Amino acid sequence: PRHLTGSSLKPKERMNGVAFDRISHWLVAALEGQGLRMWDLAGPPDAEPLMLGRGAVTTIAAEFEPTGRWLAAEDLNGVTFWPATGRWPSVMRLSAGGSRDVAFDPDGKWIAASAGRGGVEIWPSTVNSFPRRHIAADVSQLAVSPDGQFLATGTRSGSVLVLPVAGAGFRELRGFEGWVDAVAFDATGRQIAADGPMDGGRSHIVRVFDLETGDAKSF
Image (cartoon, rainbow, N blue to C red; front, top):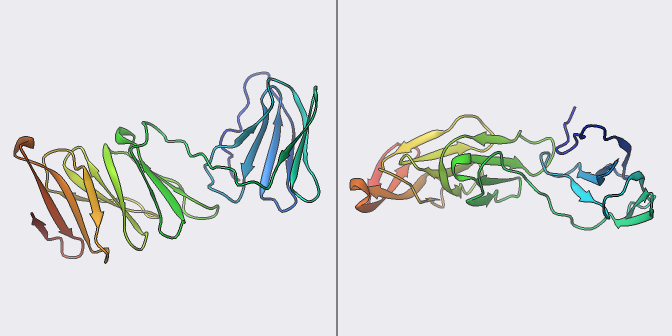
């Protein structure tokens, strides 16, 4: 079974009804005192639900009209019609910290965010893909390999982490003495360049790491 984010109820609250649209793209729930929550079942599996409402009213029921273009919600004050065919945003919530950088897969299959001390979060953009990943580390900017299979990020401890997007674990490339501020893949995806401090922070160098041989050059 799939757990829907944001579906829990507060004490003494109840759900007055649920409904699918005609192609099972959207699922809507009518919550007492909270209006409507609507989930995109074809979108990112951990996205926050859309919150639809017109004040602190008790929603009695909700139903999609047969063409799927409108969602009708009945409350104690009347009936509200919401457009159901618009391009609604997907909201992804970080486990901790605030976002410092975001990166997209070249083919749109996933999105990633670095959250400083909150680490790196990777979300699939569609259901039935790989599971959401969270890597705990103190990180900076993100770089994406040309084939979209790997992410790289700098750390406070002076290393570069290379993360397989749909796999487990990571590879750590060491060579600095503090925050690695910037990372980049070359066009082949075989090399990573990173900038970071040396000599107690009195100077900065750029290192280029060869991911196949493990060699590193400094500039």
